[in-house]
Image 1: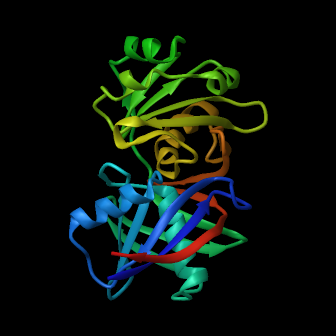
Image 2: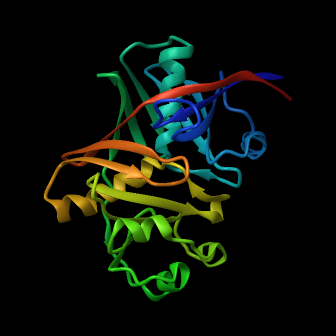
Length: 259
């Protein structure tokens, strides 16, 4: 069996920026064990698979260790493949996923994702994050992930978390964030229990971050940056119960998997 594979840098203006995702088109779903083994072999934070339906595509995302219910950067990468490599559609594409229907549009030199805005709630967890990061946070919220708020951007840049303790947490991962001097806010994302010590740019994190920063900054549009080693800028906007997340994509690799 042979499968096409693409490596796409998402939230990037050129190769070696943003977050790389593997994208694999399928005509029908393969056994889950095969999907997981391919993702493990790719060893990227996410491998996305998609299968055509009558009105769009069903999409699934796998880390090297497990399937996840939402991934922004790999959705952006999949839309790039459909728009620019396979030429299946020009302006918009609808994905069916475990997180509901997700629309991606190509306009204004960006790919624009329409994702559900996530509700966040205060978390009772606090002391564990002081131990994990060796810095006292301002406050901690939780949603799909923990959202840990720190005093300033320099703290976020210099955090060196205890990965072993991060693996003991019950949620998917941990987002750390603070106000920024050049952006509305900055962030980083850690999910070692999924095989991702630190994710370069995490689109799904912004579906939670916007719920917090909308309350603090009294804004609905944001320019932000995930300040990982690769880094990536993310433009985002709240529209009712949805959030629009924008970014650029660049193809790094196109090849064939032989199984």
